[in-house]
Length: 320
Figure (cartoon, rainbow, N blue to C red):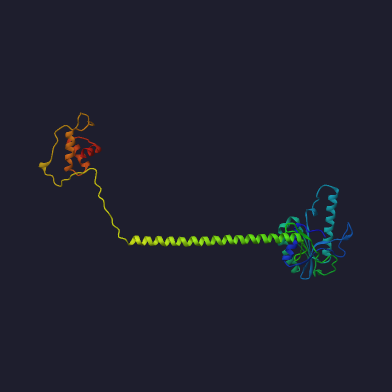
C-alpha cells in the first residue's frame, strides 16, 4: 500500500473527525483493471450507516499527461480507463461514488460532509455537482452494504515517521519510539522543567522586590502627608513690603491761584525745538510736580501754555 498523498491525508483526518469507519485501497470482486487484469483498489471505502460509499481523489495526472512522451500519454489513458471501470462498477452495484477533482482540494471538508449527508438521506438516480469540477454519482437504492465481499485489508496499519520527534506512528493510537530518541525527548523535557523552575524563582524575587518598593512608597507618601498637615496647622504670617517709586511726586490737593507759578525764561539752550533744556526750565518743570500728579499732565501743561513738546523720558529726568 502506497503512502497517502497530502490531500488523501487530509481526507483521512476529515473522516476520522466525522467518526466515519473507512478502509483505504479496498478491492472488490469483478472490479478489475482492464489493462493489467488485476483487482483495482479504490481510495476510500466508507461505512455510512452500514451502507457502502466510495471516495476517489483524482490528482492532476488523471486529467492531463505529465509531458508529451508516449509513456505519459499511456499512463493518462490507463488512469482514465481505471476511472471509468470504478464508475461503472459503482453504478452496477448501487454504490454512491464521489470523485473529487484536484482543483477542489481546498474544499474537502465541505464536499465530503455534504456527500456523507446525501448518502444518509439515500439520494439516488442522480448525479450531483458539489462544485464545477467535483461530482457525486448516485444510482439506485438500496445501496450495497459495507460488508459485501471485501477482499482488501480492513484498517491496514500505516507507518508515518516523524523525523522531528523521532518516532513512527502506526495508527491514530499507537507509536513506536527508539530508546535513543525517547531519551533525547526526556532530556529535553527535563531541561525545560529546570528552566521553568528558574523562571519561577526569578519571578518570585521580582514580586518580592515590587512589594517592598510599594511598601516603601506608601511610607514615603504617609510621611509627606504628615508634613503637609503640620505645615497647614502653623499660622501663616505675611510680610508686606512697600515698594518705593523711583520718582516721588509731592502732590498738593488744593493749589491757590496766587500760588501758581509762571515761567518767563528760555526753555531751550538753543532755538532748536529739540535742544537741551535750560537749568531754569528744569527747575520749573520740577516745581510743576506740586500741581500735577502725573508726568503726562505736566507734559500737557507745557504744550498748552508754552508750546513746548518735552518727551516723557526728559520730564522724568527733570523730576528726579
